[in-house]
Image (cartoon, rainbow, N blue to C red):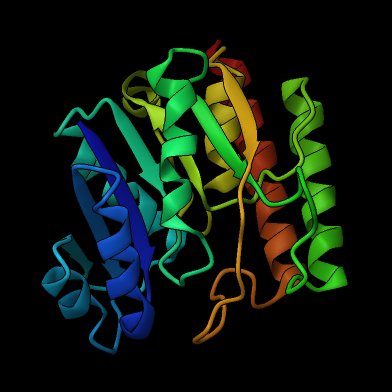
Length: 228
């Protein structure tokens, strides 16, 4: 069984198309509606998704924790995470899943930078991404190009090992948790497109995002190291 998890906040205008396309490549789509004020939940449900609604706006990290807690009960072979804003191409899901199905990786990151740099990304965001990616790469002892990507897939074994804590963002924490514990992590190139509607809630303030992410990176690294 393959399951997609999509965190969403006020993505009524884009979520239906993402769910419908993702359902062509996975068995179930789980949308975590993080207390949207529009019709995101209804739109996702009408498109065939299982919808879990957070009663409070808790952040994308909390939405992913909610989704992971739910899909753990399903014990899927593969879990895919993608954003609800339409920036990712669900048609790339089979490429993300393939290394896991073949047993060559347990976490696959869809990198936006392996082939080119997204034209829609500002210079400041690119710089921030490179800095945080460098820190994570240094700590896990292998080179990554995009540790902030929201498009990724992981195995059932990796899923059951995850114990995410950050409500703010999950991206670096997940990589550190799995890579530092010896899970096989790789990157593959993926395409991205500009979001059509709304703005990013997580990275709306780059400085705030970088500081909070650094705190998550350091605390996760120390926690995993003390548990080994």
